Length: 537
Image (cartoon, rainbow, N blue to C red; front, side, top):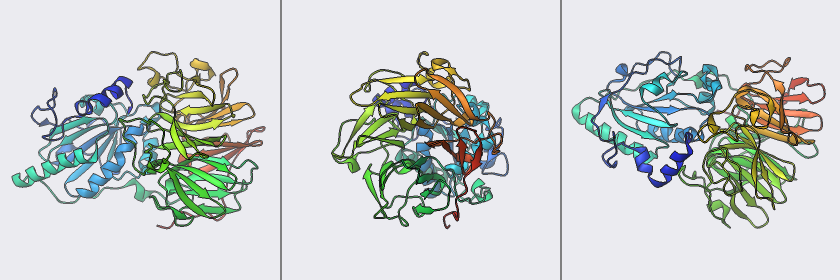
């Protein structure tokens, strides 16, 4: 995905326009790229639609330019495309119709309610069809996430592309169709209104919380209120509340109440300093809790492109492009960054103000070896015991162990290592056991405490417990089916974990809540945050 096969990633580095093709007259000659437009295959076969009150037949969209986005919500490369689609929809509001064709990788992604949460989380405002059985995927002969098809106002396929599509490529292709069909009189520029999921959902104090951390003394609980684009600091009882961020998505440094984040995720506390992985801004932010200010300490604000990887060392971290920093760990003055977008770990030396790659060669895979030659697969969670970084490697459905200096190795504690290439990214499930026999499903969160590792087995709606010495993995909490009950505990795509004393804190993302679990009794309760309100509209 960015996903499918590592070989394609390598090819994309060499011949991106060959893997891409076709949207406009500038495309190079490639097999099937220059064929004449042909009737677009049907969108029949989906098992439900979102953001529309009816199933859509392409015939009813004659006169519109239609862009089909084949995606799956686990895929970081698919997430990269969404801002481009929003920008195109804003530029061509009456000419272009974007349709998301959600063809899932993971079993959990087939569920329309889980897909609905993803549409809400990523604030998608175009129609999305749940292609749960990949019927439409096969009809269009798709083999890669993301892929795109451009359909002209006469209902014919006039372009397609594998992989991430730059805005300018899509923009040129769409502008060409607008000019051509205005001249022909075949362009329908009447607006269409959709029945958006965003308009049907109540506003909640927490919205899709991503990560949660606890200060070393247990006095501070910090929540990444990711869907509200802000951070919440409270005590473990939920009584004392500080809000960081205006609640409006974007990038802005300054006082706590004015600062802006975009889907903040992982955090670490160092005294009165809070470091934040500002995911969709592709930045690392620093919050001075004494001074009450937010500053940017790494990242340019522009995403490192999918065909590049983190390379070299820089003494100017704010000029160093990042890609979807998802979690953080602080060890010995070094801030380790889970770089989901490039399938790597980076390290920011706070003493020398330098940043460099740390582990992973940028190829999406589950492959052990040295720091430089190993492969990660969308690392999304970090924890440490001071000797190792424990990594929730989400697309590989694995738990990895990365040595800290002076070590030079990446290993797999549980999950898919040992399988042949091309199978490692697609070996997932829900199976307890030991080592490579374990099956997880897109884990996003991880926490370490008292010699044990807790894993947010996100798409299984469970919390797993791993003994790193024996590599034994067992289910600790949660049921296979999503839900919101506390007894027995049900979760819905939990993503963040923290442990303090005898309490496990869970960011229960799709239930918009923080759940605490007593480690001894395993009794669960919902954390009530006193006085917390949704951000103003």
